[in-house]
Length: 352
Ligand SMILES: *Cc1c(COP(=O)(O)O)cnc(C)c1O
Image (cartoon, rainbow, N blue to C red):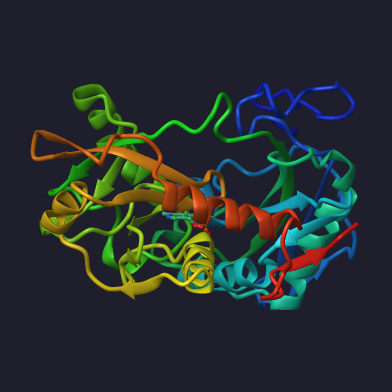
């Protein structure tokens, strides 16, 4: 018996849904690409995308009990000339390999992951909205072994799949500066899972985020255990002024955003001095006097921060409005993504 869980799919094109009015991530393309990996670590892929459909799985499926599940999120953008290209495909493929490895599962070859993403995106390329919309791509890996005794072992089998989701502008109604709450005590995740893109990390960050929304009317929580700034539940953190761009140096405590890496490169291209180093909450608080702050991630690209709440005190970043350096970096990045400026770093993979 296939359990549908009462889920109804909304097919973007067939039902004429508008990605610009639907909430982010609630519309789906018509296709998915699916591969399985067996006990010997051998991946099997049909070699093409297939129709999107429900999965039927055993209630004891490993991912449902022991959280053997990771994902990626990247976008295909419609270009100025009407064609479509995926942004930084190989970087997302490489990060997905790291995440699968952290589940201690057999890591899929980069070529396979890459092909499956391209196949799903190509099959649904017709659903790609014009900029600032895009076709969001969601590669996912789950442990599929029906085994509730495998609490201390990796799932013996797995599934890799890619679905697509036409999305509109993350900031429908204009860019609104965010209020972020600084969390000093509860960490976002555990040291060994900091750089894994996993649902387990998201559900761990959820409680502190909902509490901050309720108690402090904050939009997001910036995790800074012991005063050491890391990131929010789903985005990296930056300080910027007219000369400098500062973000935390890479270590295993946080997710290495592809947007983060892109912002760093673009900032260098624009002549900013880039510092990758530790940021203390006290520095952040002082920075608000003269500088700007923003969050970076694939969904929102760059989201300006207007206010930070530090130990009960609300500090406004300058006038609380999106800063000019923040908007300049955002525009430079979205220009490359959509072909408005030249792709000098080879970040685009054309798909149709
Ligand atoms: C996905 C994610 C980011 C942003 O990464 P991008 O590659 O820029 O989209 C940041 N933090 C966490 C925890 C994430 O899961």
